[in-house]
Length: 52
Length: 418
Image 1 (cartoon, rainbow over the protein chains, first blue to last red):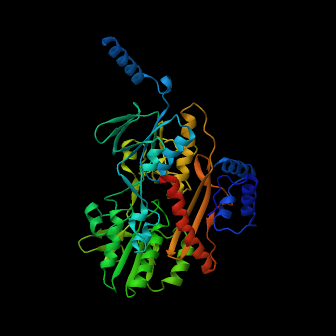
Image 2 (tube, chains in turn red, green):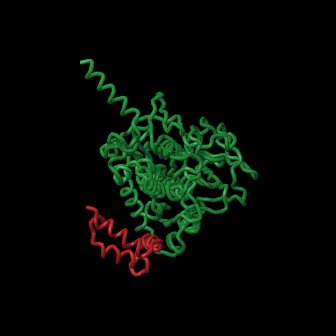
């Protein structure tokens, strides 16, 4: 399991967008990513990137 | 000396009568119930604002988690792996009070504990989980549960059901009953049926399991039934409501479950009875006639009592299921809202998530996920989001999800109790 805290914001955004679009293999993250808008994904990524 | 004593008393009296935010004292939030919802909320409150004085009221020194407890019943996991203490929660600066909350005065804003002590609050969060609705199923009372365990609150009941299965001779009949909606952990009865079937298949293959259901449909149904046909043909029989599956009474003296169409005398009987919000919800006046608690979907504040919030299984949370992950998500939402409300700020609109795994066999996992948003006063699924595992998938995918079920448990329990 990948630890999200401190990951690069852009990398998290890309991962979420890829999950949402079905470009990245997933089990549950594709289903969850589909529930979030671009703005929300940016906010989520910014929060995780700021964690340590 | 006298003067100093007088001054000291004066200061104490002033503090006692001070409004919550004066004298540098932070807002006071009391959380009742130390499960996934309550412990998560207490920690999230401290994280949101360290000035909030958070008290967590919990009667038990140890928490026993329900997720994966069906694996304990199936003999493949020990109960100790389900148990957590509140040491790390207390280390966050949360006052953990080991007591039963017996009363709530919503006017005076205080909680009464079993020993008569009172805790004052600015906001109260109730996370009492479920209580069994004793008497709703004729014949099923607390004494009956010692013979026909429900095992729907993990702990001694979990071990009792496991011991009964272990003591049963090969060729015995196991009968389960599943309740009508709503109840804790919608896929839980079917995961349990699967893991009991797995135990019987590997240890007592001449035995049989019948699941009597008060419903015609259930969570992850297609996935479960597909897996049952593959893994447990002839061993596990599910009887739906329309096929006469509804249990109308039980007789603990003979271990018998009665439907409108017949009687099933079991060697081992597992009765999952109707449920309601934990008792303090009723005492506090936040439960409605259904036994569950209507809430505002943005703040989780009760629709029946001001300044009291209800989270987790006890709450009526619209499309969200009564699951540990949902409880954790609701706890964070509620904490964020309470942290703003106690400082006079307006709460922000939340989005909530649920993820829930079920094991059909130790190496066969399936999942459901959902994203939820307040819509028209209730929590609704975000259109196009969520769903269950694919119907057609190789066994390798099911094995990956079985592994993720374990990872899910380690991650959520580390966040809440670690």
